[in-house]
Length: 294
Ligand SMILES: [Ca+2]
Ligand SMILES: [Ca+2]
Image (cartoon, rainbow, N blue to C red):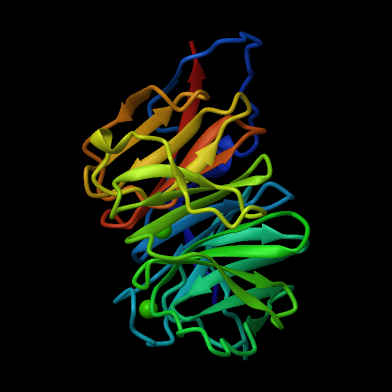
């Protein structure tokens, strides 16, 4: 049976409101006080926005590497938070779901050593085989190029992999990237965050060149969520520091937006409603912050 969390009703209410956006060219961003909170989550790692405007939250539920079969996805819609979007019925279990991205009509979800492609309550898992590549032990964030490839960070093995949606192909895009976690496909390039470098960088996947780092390592201890605003500003979470940052479109300026948060993980932006959605992994909540342009 689905459970509705009463704490989610405020967030559900804000799903009905679109916040206005000013048209200023050069902007600085801040975050308002939380508009809503979803409680009752179980080690939430990531929030994604579906094309129809619902929010999907992955719940690791237990150890991040254990194949315990108890991971699940929560959905937040206008009715509130339903603790079980997936799995339901006889659908195959998830273990420790982390990154989520929308790929066409499906959701792609990383789950330790595989990716679940979930559509209409059913899941299939990719890849069919890793072939000669080492099998991942900690697939983390995932992003879609909108055409062909799903890109996923393999944090423990320090790689970025890409997978064809049909599960037939898997390739290494970058290696020797210690602690690679956050990924975002943005304007034809792959933005990455890595704890080894403490930095954000960019990969041109067509060149085969190693990541080009932005040189912002002094600001970060760990980089998890990466989201982009319409002006090219990046919103970045540092879970270890409990902080959310903005990185300017020229990638030169880093601004603290919120501090003292309980492990803010893989965030996403709802551009339509101008909300930043942040799962708090150690708070068992997800919080919606209004994006305020000054
Ligand atoms: Ca689990
Ligand atoms: Ca992550």
